[in-house]
Amino acid sequence: MEKVYIFGHKNPDTDSITSSIVLENLERKLGNENVKAYKLGNVNKETKFVLDYFNVQEPETLENLEENANVMLVDHNSFTQSSDGIENANILKVIDHHCISGFETKLPLYYLAEPVGCTETILYKLYRLNNVEIDPKLAGLMVSAIISDTLLLKSPTCTEDDVKVAKELAKIAGIDLEGYGMEMLKAGTDLSDFTAEELIEIDSKKIESNGVNIQVAQVNTASIEEVMKDQEELENAMNKFIEENNIDIFMLLVTDIINSDSEAIVLGNRVDIAEKAFDRKVNNNRIFLEGVVSRKKQVFPVLMENT
Image 1 (cartoon, helix red, strand yellow):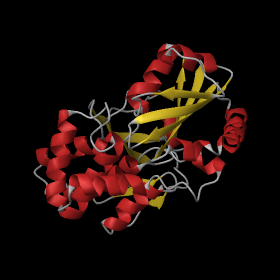
Image 2: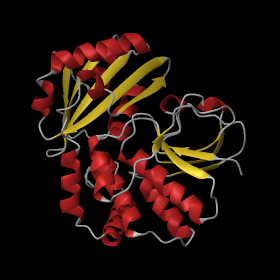
Image 3: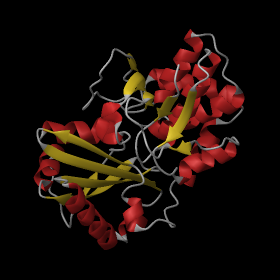
Image 4: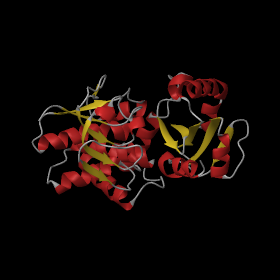
């Protein structure tokens, strides 16, 4: 078989990066030597912490995807979140835990999606199904992604499967799940090196719903107010992004990993969508969302329902 590119979504997070690495390993163990994991952007500080902790090299950045390239997608399916040129690629496989959005293929494919908190939970099952051993280093990457996506098993997206798999992987990796998990999450909250323009794109995703372009970015922090002290600069960056990318509503979700709440900066010509969705007014371009930590389950669905 010709070369196969494996990658996650743009503005990659820990699940996107580690799942690419983990799927490459599984494919090779199953005899497919022509696969290679890539990333579509720079790794964030949390992911860098994980890769450094387990001494794993980050994937090469995919600069260009040639027409009719063979690809496998992890942690996403939406073309708006994927590589440029994905619509002309030969998609062989998708391993994902998101809703299906803006996805179409030219040929039949292997598609595996489950409503769990993390792609790595699904990949764990594939390893077990194929009787492929998970070594400690790989287990460390996998459990890190589950910790990240479920906020240490506290997110409403977290399922019993995620909890069971995370505990098993932590044993294989030889780590204390709670202690390592909090250390890892805190590593990702250091935003001091980022400009406002960079911060709103660290983890940012776009979905189109009924002709409305919705952009939701998310950053984790131990102090919402520490992030919000730069609200003016963040708003300037968001407004520029809105103008350049034809966005109707842009939410920057600032999530408190300690108290499991979020506050969002909301801008655009369809702020009314957020007010309807969360049944509260946006004041000073901000809206407090008690108990909201999951963009996938608690933000995108309710915004889409109100477009």
